[in-house]
Length: 346
Image (tube, rainbow, N blue to C red; front, side, top):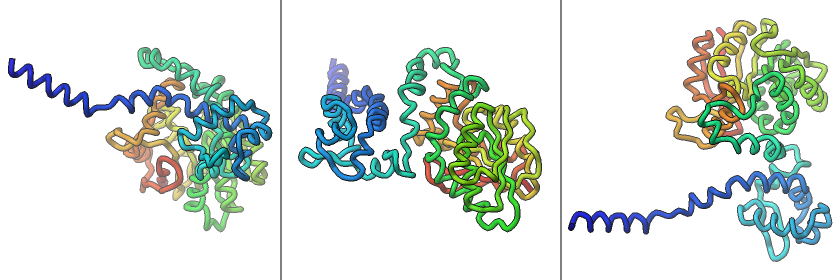
């Protein structure tokens, strides 16, 4: 009897020190990106970018209802995206920098696809975990081409700063023509940054035929279209050319999966000239896969949206690069959740 009473006391003590608060708050985590999307689409952040405003002024400027705005603004204050002094709402510093659509630093593009693309697929997560089969196939040429054509331009700024760091490290001092092979080019952000860094750069952008028009449009917008050429088709099947001095793989390995990624790195190696470099951008978790949270959550996103996609550690990618013949595999610190990975062809 004495042993049972001691156990009961331990249980009572444990229940007093353990709180369900963190778990209960997680119930509403799904609402945050939806509220950001609603704010972007109703121009809330844009109209607050020049000065703080009250509810009536925001409603007048956006055309949104006061009832809807009152609820949304209150919640945005609650999660720290907006501040409020008296009746006037104002942007937090990070929102002012990255969620105002008129600024070059705008990072909110991915939110605009949350309600239509991301969340609907994630609603099937329990079944996907059970079967191992995705809700959609973003790496399928038909389904994926439409998917990426719709949103790659919106996420241009998410990679632009990292692409500029890579360009400065590789082509800044170029004094002769540099051929850049931009694999799965999407918006063309990696090749565009290279072309902007040096007038000697010429870019070969490779992607599905349905995505290439977007690449062309964005390259023209940045004034470098005359230095781009295009190859349409599957990156594991099309002719990648030869003797390129630089290859960029910006956030593509995760959707390809391990087997296709290894084959792709081998194909790119064959297309590069001796003494050339490859730049890889990925969401890389720590080697023991205990964090950071963002890459690991993105791994679940690959489960939801691809047949074989996943996230890979630096050492996993390093082993593939070395097996393909690359040398001097290293990290390059850049903006974003993970460093860039660079390697050279001897």
